Image (cartoon, rainbow, N blue to C red; front, side, top):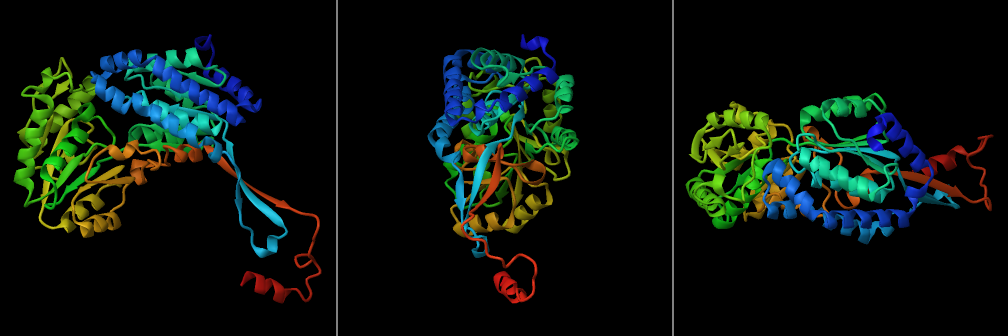
Length: 458
């Protein structure tokens, strides 16, 4: 039935649904969030199989980074009744008698466009916020992860009314058709180049956007660290999902004093994680397609390989790789790597590392490994990024109470937890006045009232 409808018809039906007012009920929203949770729980096998086909994603990684989005649903269910309540605000003296409130209200019909690297989780996360905020939603999964796209479509069709939540599958042509339509909000996760296209299309309708992009997320490694923990946390954050993570450590800025020991520890940890031959490991994912494989294979030539470097084009396999002696002018340091290649840049003084970071577009994430609180504070004050994680990698994305989003080239807007609700709501300001008193200080004639106005202004 849905396949027979045009995109315009799907949107029109959702607008009718939204205008009926049923999605505004907090009870309805709670019911739909519970349905979404049940849908995920009842289809975990299908989700695991789809991600295995698309990315050779290990089952544990699928549960830890995709299916774990259930926790975000639980967080929304726990807090939604407080989120939807109007918030009373204080009024200045001249506005009395009266009361002021901020009413969160849904935006309408929201378009969610997902990426291919975490093709389930990064569709469901904004969907949770859209449901909690009371919107209707059209979901466009990535065609580059076709098996996951199909599973998302099957789940949504089975558990939700398409006039409320609908999935539209397809490639670039379908995305163009969707972006030509007017939505009340567009939520896009993907690369910066496509993000610009989305924003340009949205501007034609004055549609607000949330752009969750990426960039080269730096990782500073000071000499004052726990070496074993640092190596393990960096290797995990970099090589999970074969490096295809928007907040993976993109490159290391390593204090010269600690560099030899860190390189040695990283090599040991990689072997500990994936064995002598990671291609044979069931715990190591693959590059998503030939295009991305070819791009990454070229970047292997941009430095001296310390470990890894092995490729297999038939299997879309690139080994966990560390490269040293990397020039800042090489392509590997000019573009987001988005794969299992980790360049090492050494520094003698922290100022050098900070300068390298600040010369590049603002990243989605910044990582610092150091026990030194003065260094921690200095990095926080002297750099700008979407978020910061100290003495770990990637884990910040799993905290529902921490808003997640970029700044500058790494994105616009934020989500997770209440931030998702806020992003996909409109805060409507309401001033309510009483009839019982009507002072005449603001009405003409103005003679004799100027001094009072000056005192009120202060």
